[in-house]
Amino acid sequence: MDEMNALPEDSAADKGSRRKARAAALRLLYAREMRNAGGDFTREDEETLRDLLDVPPDDPQMPYIRHMVRMVEMNESELDKHIAPLLRGWSLDRLSRVDRMILRYAAYELLREPVDKASDPRSVAIASAIDMARMFSTDEAVMFINGVLAGIKRSK
Image 1 (cartoon, helix red, strand yellow):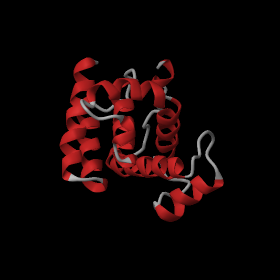
Image 2 (tube, rainbow, N blue to C red):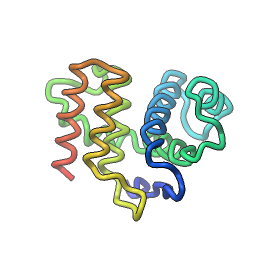
Image 3 (cartoon, rainbow, N blue to C red):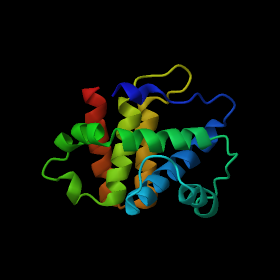
Image 4 (cartoon, helix red, strand yellow):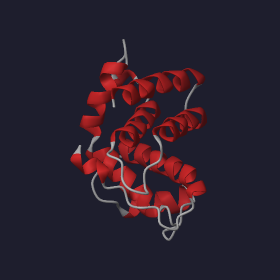
């Protein structure tokens, strides 16, 4: 997971908009998986961000969104190796697509090497994942995701 530590710095980007950026990145990951897309960003990705997710091309969080989508997709199998043993009686295939995306996204945030001035504390990554589960999934998923991510945090 050496490539997992290249998060772009925040510079002047507003940390308050990071929540919106996380949600946009998660929703774009979901859309790309539904289309069986991967690799470079496409015109369709740009249109999804702009038209459906209200993220203009000049948004200061765009480098973060692009980076997170790219890193989660690139490291999917490695992330799954950390997640799968913590599912206890479940498999990744049995999870809903959105729960899988939330777990992969948060696992990436928890497992990447700290980067000066760019890292959020691990507790923020877990809290953000729980917020996303509350927005996009079920009450049961919130507890489940919290438990899995706590296990990843302990293992780190």
